[in-house]
Image (cartoon, rainbow, N blue to C red; front, side):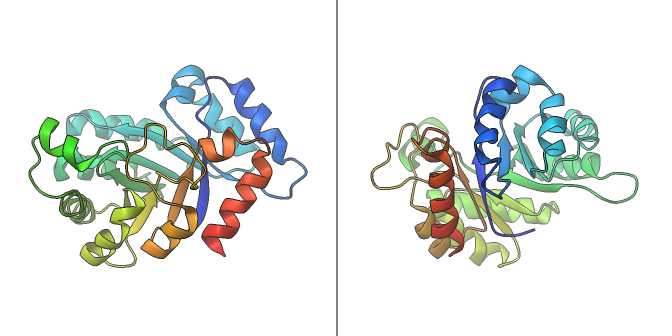
Length: 234
C-alpha cells in the first residue's frame, strides 16, 4: 500500500463523520480515512469497525507515547481492530517503538503499517529550539528521528512535506513518508506551520498526504477531494 490521499475526519461524533462520508456514496470512491483522537475518544473502537465495514481504509492516528511496556500492551489491543495504519511518537525512543511493533504484530505475523511522528507540522523550527531545547535544524532532527524509527523496524514516519526528501535520503525510498500540512494557496494555514500543496508534496517525495479542512470544510468536499487526488497522484 503506497500512494494515497488520506482524509482527516476530525469530527466530534459518529453522526457528523457519517454525514461527511455519505457525500461520497455516489462518487464511486471510498477515501482512505484518518481517525484522530477527537473522534476516537468520542466514539471508541466501534467507530473504526463501522468505517471499515463501509469499505474504507483507516489510519488510526492516536500518537502513542509512553513507557515501552504500556505502549506494547496498548498496541496489542489496537491490533484487534482491522486498521491499515497507526502511529507512535518517535520521541518515545527506539525501545518504545520496538515495543509498539511487538505489541501490534498479531500471532499470525500480520499487522497494520506502523509509523512514527517526528515533529508536528504545527511546530516551527524556532519553537522546537526555544521550547523543546532541540538545537539541530528541523530537517536534521526529523531525519534523525526517522532513522531511529527505521532502526526500530517501523514502516515510515509522519513529517511535513518539507522534510520528506531528507527522510528519503536518510532512510531510503522504501521508507514511507506520511505528510500532513497540506494547504492550497487560497487556504488558511490555521495552526499549521510547515505546509505545501498536494503537487508540492508529491514533488518533495511524500508517499501519502493527510488532508483535513481543505476537504472537510470545503463547499463541495467531493470536488475538493478529487482535486487533491488529481494534484497528488496525477
